[in-house]
Amino acid sequence: MKIVTTTSELETVCARLSGAGFVTVDTEFMRDSTFWSKLCLIQMAGPNDEIIIDPLAPDIDLKSFYDLMRNKKVVKVFHAARQDIEIFWHDAKAIPDPLFDTQIAAMVCGFGDSVGYETLVNRLTKGSVDKSSRFTDWARRPLSDKQLHYAMGDVTHLRTIYEVLAKRLTQSGRVRWVAEEMAILQDPATYEAHPENAWRRIKTRFKGRKGLAVLVEVAAWRERQAQERNQPRSRILKDDALSEIATQIPRSAEELDRLRSIPKGMANSRSIAGLLEAVERGVNMPDSEIPVVEDAKPLPSGIGPLVELLKVLLAMRCEENDVAQKLIAKVSDLEQIAAYDDALVPAMSGWRREVFGNDAMRLKRGEISLSAKGRKIILIENGKS
Image 1: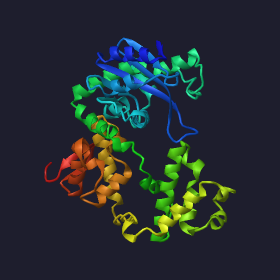
Image 2 (image 1 turned 180 degrees about the vertical axis):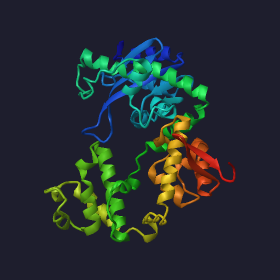
Image 3 (image 1 turned 60 degrees about the horizontal axis):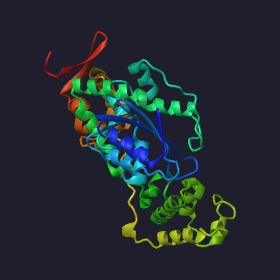
């Protein structure tokens, strides 16, 4: 295991790994007291290399690492990659390409829903994972040998896991299935946080269009404040405070101070002017610019039995294809399929439609039926014995 703390060492390591067919990658980060994740450690392993990069080392430049992440000749292998990629995108607008996520690949290969790294290590490498340093302060220096070996274990076993899963995908003809999922993880839109959309994360009942307009503006104000200060949203203002502001629409510091959810003394802070300006922008927002929140369509009555049949079909198809049910459809998706022929759910497009969606529609149309044969559920073509 090599520990890299200088730019020149990192450039040498990345130049060598640029000739590898693949590298396994993981990160350790902290986000308890910040808006943006603080990158504390990067672990990489190639076929013959085991490397830990210290991004907190004085004056280290990670450019060569991010160049490696963009190198299309080297497959970048992660397990549950989304949070890692979010950090790379924020820090350097870098998204690993090509990308292989072993959690998704394992779900496609029948290892169950959201399968964990430890499970794959046990089942595919016959190894084990040391859990003792899982909850640790990765920003503190120096890191102990125990912490470093724990961190390194997150990528060393990943080499074997990748090779086994990649072989299985090729043999089963499912490489395309995983590629469709990787496209989502590689889409920059997956990681972009737009303040104007921040109101959508607030769970509240809207009382009138004007209240919604105020919520849009104050939520955007909080999002910008959190990003600029690099603090958690709740440290700026909690969700229930945003909801109360949208309901009461305070127009002055005095009115704001009377709200129950507003922290005492906030009305006297420097940030209060910006918050009240956001309220005013909401009050004055033209009606044509206020988002339209459409209530979810009520599901037609009487679809319950069909949903139950779709659940059986889903379980059957997933067992036959040895793929995790969660990757195909949720119960809410099945309800949409039962209710609407044009349901806009993942199960009705791409490889999911091939595995399940087409038969789901045939079941709805009465073209096929479900029956039991011994202990198995089978499909029967209606009109055929």
